[in-house]
Image (cartoon, rainbow, N blue to C red; front, side):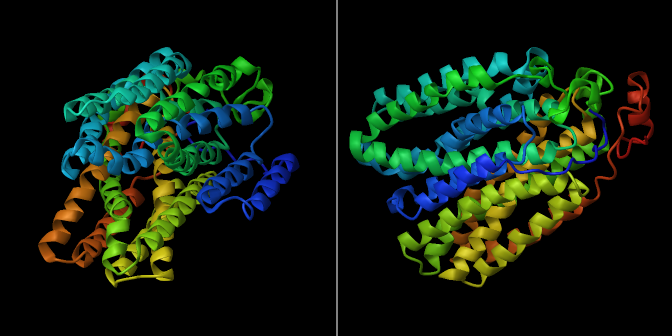
Length: 478
């Protein structure tokens, strides 16, 4: 693994995956409408897995499934679905229920860098496997939820801690150690799991609530998470060397790794002393605010433009498909084009999307706006994960990624309430959407100025801090 991006290998698709994907896509014409989005998501997963090198697909599949049933997907896609039955059952106010989101956000902000340190020190597998069990038990324990709203708050405060090994902080670290020249492609494929999980978990939750009530649905989702454990145990490995491979699926004698991964790059303390680290932190906070404000307020914005609930739901589904595609294509492009430029390219889409919403987009225009926002929302975690690996290396990858994930969480977590407050003050979402367009543009400027990748393979470990401090950390010359 080098500090600079290795040349990508030629892409060859595995026909077996493509054939199965074609069969699944054909089946989409016959499944009930409620299962359509989940069917399309599974087909896309098969397509993006097909060009990965032999010997690596199992690992990437494990991270994809782990993210599809991890804390991010569970919180993002199931919390809205349980709102109505819980409010009807316990008589809570809507604001009381939705307080679980800022509570979870606060815990993620406080814990992500620490979780990253544990993953770097002990390996992801040793953290993730117990986390799957604890996440399943904590989520399933909501079967016993009582009328005291603090019961709900405590569980949602514990979920990010007990299930920390199922977050993108952990799984991105595994991908970084397994891939170099195809790192972007692999990250995009793995992180598409969150979007795929959204499709599957949304469908599963609705069916479980309808068949067994909300208590049975919580228990069923906990069981679903637990059922992934045998697969994760069999496929998840911290290093390709454990499977007799080098990076990118190459034989070990042809791998691009010149040094042990744990010796390449900066420690967490070294990275935090550089200007570039804090430029990234600021850029991802701003970008996260823009995406969070546009994506999580999409349905209210469209409803205010006159769309029916069914039409707004279709726009949300279109956003989900675009999210998966954004992840896959952003990763593919980052292996071939300077990643900050790829990030800027994808951020141009939500600028156009929020401007459409500001002008009262409805009908097909609303769906187009949703897809534009989804493309950037899909690319965001790919970009963060990829840039952290290129600019700071793998020595303390999970810790450094954890910090940047905090930046994203602060931005995206604070945006929805802010946008809602602005809309309430002005009596329209137009000012908020125009402000988001400016915010996206500012994030483009910050990310585009990060500078060239350092080459850690050429920078001896002993001189790493000298280079970082002498240059202010903005660029470490190879």
